[in-house]
Length: 218
Length: 223
Image 1: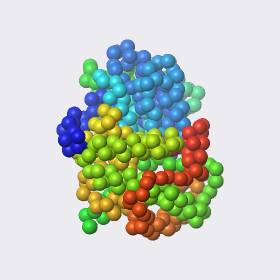
Image 2: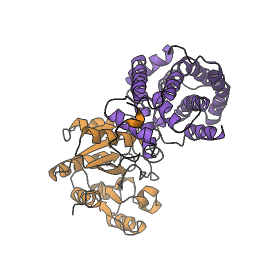
Image 3: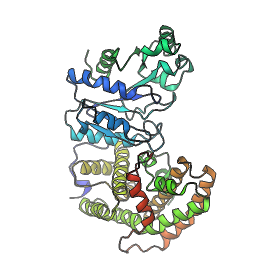
Image 4: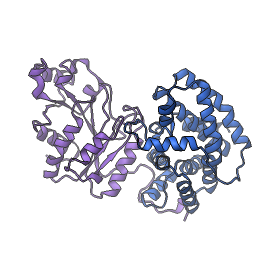
């Protein structure tokens, strides 16, 4: 059978994704993997069928951490190497991530949600909308209360800004309320959620935002 | 002629999203062994890859896939041959993943051949090795054969250059000197190489380095 005669499940090229795809980006150490670890039991309890793609910068540590966590079927965690270009793999050339998402969808029919974790970058990283439908940017208070004021594209353009490690604020000289107010101001009032991924603070609110934005659940 | 040249420039441009940036095809491991490259050393390495793997293996697979057109059975055979003859796992899986990303990009751009190849890969009818996918899709885009080969050779050389620069193994300008020196080699190989030759690839140093890379604790690239 020739390619021209091969029956195709799709018409033309743009195969619509079945699962909603969301990005979780942010600087190294801000708590992206910890946020995913905290979200996993919440999403499972809500009955969401999901998988994770990690983009580790120099190792597969994040993917292995999730696979060994016991929280999720290891087969539902896929790793994509960033080739020393953490920006590129989620923005200029997201095709490896797109292919990884397609593979997960083929492997797990009924998948509703795929979380793409970026390899960790600076405040300029953003996700291609070819790859994700909606994306979160994670910063943490220990990185300094001036991060929102720097107005990095990640902070400004994301659909949801998560300010993590809020428990550390008094220990690093950060006035949390001021930092959150400034974050909301530079984002023009778009959503900001304060979290402590280790204790679970704010995680239900993040799950609510995901459900509302891409799963269309109130 | 001009249209084919423009198509080749488009597909050889590192700005075209096909996942190639994440693959070093042994360069990361070689840089770890050798440290910094001079422009001449990098030129020599690229020439070895072009003469001993690309011209005699990747180029021939590309050419035969190009000539196979929409014959999925023939593409499947070429894909399996590439799989069987690529002994180093990281290189074998690398060209499959790279090919899968290349196909995904063209499928999203609305190329019907790419969409069908993507479905064939998902169904297990094709493996998706990069040179085979390039041959099939570039033909569907109306490339001529020489332009397809030139684009493939250039992508091979420029990919090595990009990896070496990102690894800090050579400066960006010195790397361009090495790339410029590689251009006449690519041209010569396209003009003179035997299109009917048996497939062959013999780069033991790079194969061993790539095998070492698989076990590396820290790595930036897929292979």
